[in-house]
Picture 1 (cartoon, one colour):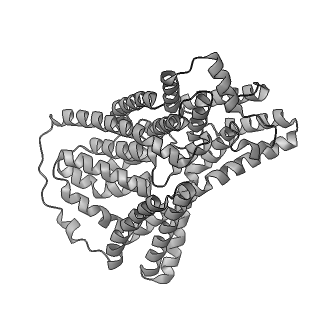
Picture 2 (picture 1 turned 120 degrees about the horizontal axis):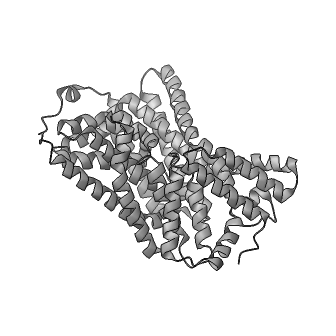
Picture 3 (picture 1 turned 90 degrees about the horizontal axis):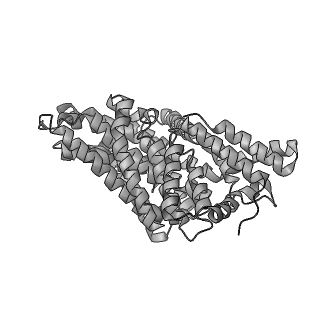
Length: 456
């Protein structure tokens, strides 16, 4: 049972509401999270010095919880830099150009290539890779650049980033905030993601086909001569085969040995390190390669920290709401805020499958409006824990719904400033791209919410 609601509970709630308002207004929320940590600490301890220390300890604890994911993203980004240096990235994707023979195949080849590379290499490097290699081929068969961008966006940032099954960055953050196991969350994500994906892509493809009826058909000529004549080093050719096989091996190892969470992340990170080292050793000009690998890791960590810097602070505040991490920050006697609110809410308002699923989706859309993708995932995990704590409903499915919705919106599909990378690589307007994505994504969110109502 939940405990009584105290001043700490209401302060936490007030700060949370203020954060949601800021998100709706498209403002940054880091400042309010820091203020919230200080105020909660001051009310709990009554000591200003201790409260100041709590601010630091909260961020440090949050960073310690999430650092592994930030590091593995850094390592994979660095590896992708090395692969690009030897042309292996281009070779890995070149076979896909052979099956792009018409607009339909172009739409789905671009989309599924983006999905796979987003899962394994993260969407940002995948955008550059897919844009450079497949966009010219797609344009040859007459698919407009805007629709190529839609396919990249919906498959990569909509379907890939919102699940993040391989690197497990998103589910690790959500699961930690919800107090559940990462593998349980990913299992719960599958049916919700499948419904979201089928509806989103189905609606987008219908709109695409409808628009294509007004544009003359273009037949694809033979592969571009310049592309065929381009030469690659033996190392590039070897690594273009070894790299995908290595990561397929990781997936097999995870299934065979039951590797999950930190163990799976460690395996992926280790393989990325080995691949980067191999590239460095055999790239040629060893002394220069020693400089190159340092540059790759600087860029990789710079990219990851740019994503996770605000996440560390935001998660620090929302971790105060659960007893999973809050006791490490505050010490004994600190209330389980979200648990207490959950029981109080359940006693005051009839919370059923329908209302809970709708609330989670609406908050997911609102928190996604900042366009950051990951920074507000702790909110979704904490909210799932709060809304299901006093019921027999599934925290895993509700957290999965919140994660898919929040990342699909904020990770870069319907927020103009979130789709800029894809828009830039395709040479289209970010606003036009976000507008094209809006109807398919909202239909997918609606379908996923309905599916969650039955799964809860």
